[in-house]
Image 1: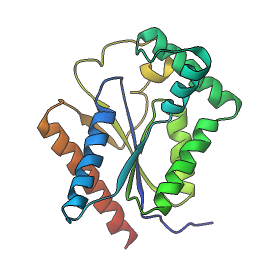
Image 2 (image 1 turned 45 degrees about the vertical axis):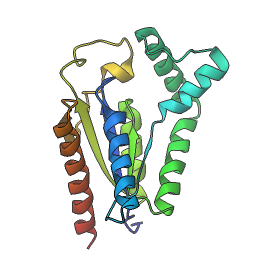
Image 3 (image 1 turned 60 degrees about the vertical axis):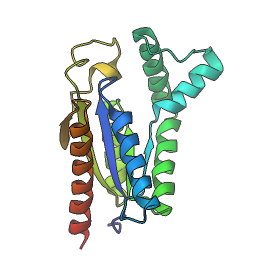
Length: 193
């Protein structure tokens, strides 16, 4: 069964900790809101990070204090894997999020996932449900050689990404990121016509 293509582009963003994924996506979203407020053309955008659900559980049930040490990252990765292995509620929440914002007219949904198996599963779900999806690996020179002692953080490079982006954490990187996102959205729209 072939689905009508959705107007929303989903960009799955991955990379080592502190590679700037959330920052660049958040800044892109803020820029689009600023364009809207000035009556200019804009792309309604939003971001979802599934590990946030796991962090809420870790805080509520295990007293996690929010630190980002290697031990904490390992604990969060283990909790996420437990969720995946038992009922995958985080994945279900993520797909509901994407569908809700598509229905509300959002044009770009950023999803930040580190677990390679979840990226593959989400790609399959999105393709089967009429979404255009792109995967992006973001890296920076400063943290890529660190080992984090958990499969999610340590295996981010082991995937065939559509886009590989070096974040130098400067203004040029931000504008390059915006250009990549907008270009991919335009390509998606052109392919729909």
